[in-house]
Length: 113
Length: 114
Image (cartoon, rainbow over all chains, first blue to last red; front, side, top):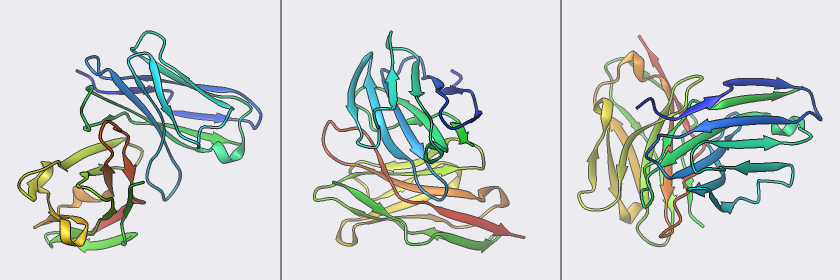
């Protein structure tokens, strides 16, 4: 088991561009979470999936953000019309259903210039 | 809603000395509590967790934590710090039944001096 992987690890984009991040969870895990971490802060919950169903979205997730997990395996997080305030580390985590133990990926660091 | 406070932003400790990181939570019932460690440029690694039972829990890398309901605390300790323990440490709480998202504190950065 290689753990949770995320791609890309770093992304620099210009304001107004769209970006998409990918997360591959641990294969047996059916829950997948997205968090955002800004400098000097802990991760903040964005959204989570149980299999392919998106069960909850934080109010932090504006209309410009969309997440999918089409086949209940990998997930994508898309940010449209990026803003400088979107600059952050985007973390993905996965867990077994019914478990609070979440395993995190290395994150994707987004810089919006 | 649950919340987590880590009062210390930054702690410097000498190698070989003991370390204690503070964590206070706010939640009406018994929460599920976690400590994670994050090295620069890396994701979060789970150090230990508390769900119920013995209030002193052991984790990886020689860390332990004690749950004190009366103080709403879950402090992390290590008797003897190694240079490789320099990292950022996050306390997290998962609280509402069937609501598995975690709420994190702002983190404590640990610097280890030789």
